[in-house]
Length: 293
Image 1 (cartoon, rainbow, N blue to C red):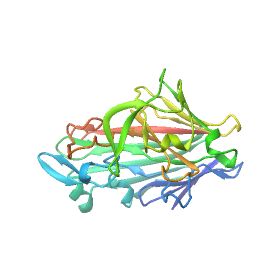
Image 2: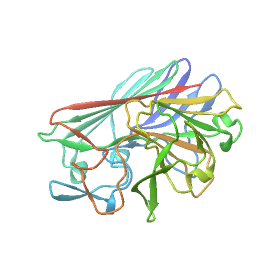
Image 3: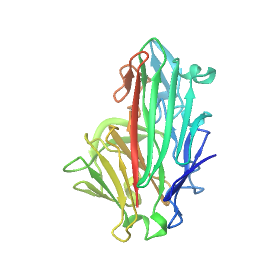
């Protein structure tokens, strides 16, 4: 476990999966990140897939490959390549296990930097292969709701900036695993660019916002000054999720570059909507910030 801190915050990151496990407000002595029993994860890194693939498979150059839900990065050991007081950098490179699932030479670098306002998380994907490389990338942080134990889940709201009018989501079908149907629907309990939280919103499963142009997403309650705002302007989508079969005290706010499959057969990743196609020997950086109060 790697620890970083500054005057305001302290964070811990597990080398297994480069997963943020704690993010503590030092002055008020509370943790923003979920560590409960009902869901055993905290903030997984999603790469090179998001969501579940049809039959847990995908197609590339006419060949079918296996791919677990959310990809394999969360189950890999990362190497710490830099560690300072308020910065930690983790790296994963292709190995024998990843090449069975994903036939590319790649490097995934995840950098955590504590700021006076919160936490910056940066992802750099490098294609070290001689051919184009398709991938998806996401971050899956789970935040304690209520924040610092103040009030209750359904007194909180989520506000989106960068969109106007109704908030739409991709329709989800469970078989029993969640897939997209290819259709969109109105996000219930939303009014304008805000969503009032309640557990019924999540009974269908994950809620992936389909409106383009989202710049930030903010979790807050009128009953407390504490809030979490994420600048996600470098990501195309954001997903909201909590366990649909239990009333759990957490909410995931997940920036995505990529999408789960539409229900059907395994998809050709060079043609899959939402995938990034990275040219040979190119790299791409995607970064977001958590502004914490």
